[in-house]
Amino acid sequence: MVVPIAIREAVTDDATAIAAVRVESWRASYRGIFPDAYLDGMRIEDSAIMWKRVLSVRSKRASVFVVERDRLIVGFAAGKALEEPRFGIDAELAALYLLPDAQRQGIGTQLVKCVAQFHEAKGATGLLTWVLSEHKAARHFYEQLNAELLIEQSFTWDELELMEVGYGWRDLQALANRCSK
Image (cartoon, rainbow, N blue to C red):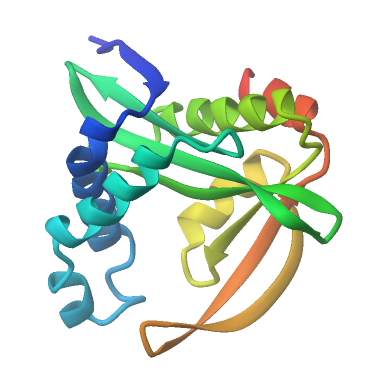
């Protein structure tokens, strides 16, 4: 039986649920990429403080969508307009996380579509996203959505040296159409 989902814009009261999805998703997806001690030390409370701040601002240049299944938040996506375009792209898919049991069901694709349509309505023409180089499943996901590989580079996250790739879409309508297939 397929359980229906509902996608909506996030509200401030969603901060703790978003934080819980982020922490659980990181622990499942980044095990073997990030040190276990780092992942095990992540605290929902710390992430919730940041998300409460983000959601309380309500910027017209940013979007946060949540997906609910059985009235529980099982994933979220966040996007923002870029102050300065990068690689000729003017908006960013800044976060896309799903609980492990919500992955590979088309939910992430629907969240990407929501972010793309939101930013296209605000005048954006493209979307950029960053993925850890070693995260093969995420890379495959974006490649299936016809993302263009723009760059691979090193970066530092909490004193950890990592490699990331930047993917982009230069046509948000084409991306939304691809997400509808």
